Length: 166
View 1 (cartoon, rainbow, N blue to C red):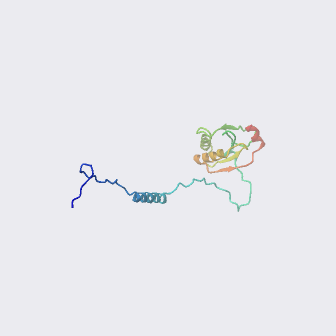
View 2: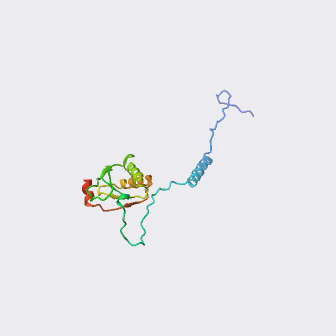
View 3: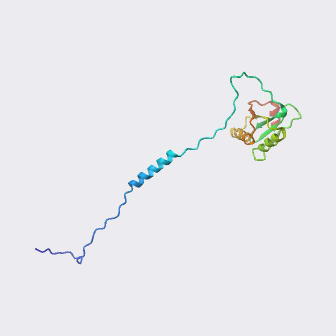
């Protein structure tokens, strides 16, 4: 028996078109593998620390004598100020000078002093109560930049130094 087509489409049959599907699973797997590889293969930035030479604790405490002619006393003050002098603070002929942390500041003073006195000189570092910790680190960085290896951090200031700063 024959079938009768009762549709009014004009006799054309339409084919269903399916949309193209891309499987993203391999690409995601590859992405995670690459991320894991680069995380494990790279080295993270290590923190840079400054090496400080600490005195030997086995040696008994005895006062260290430093020549006035081969020493420079540097005092870190408030508002990024740096005071420096050569000699003893109680000597009336000693003039305390003031500078800052710019390129023409304490760095220039240390280079000039090194050229005038010579290499083996000692920098005595002191700070006021109002000094910032950042300024002390900046001063230690300046000593490293200028190549000064002999310095001492002293935690007491004399009354003469306080009067000359004020």
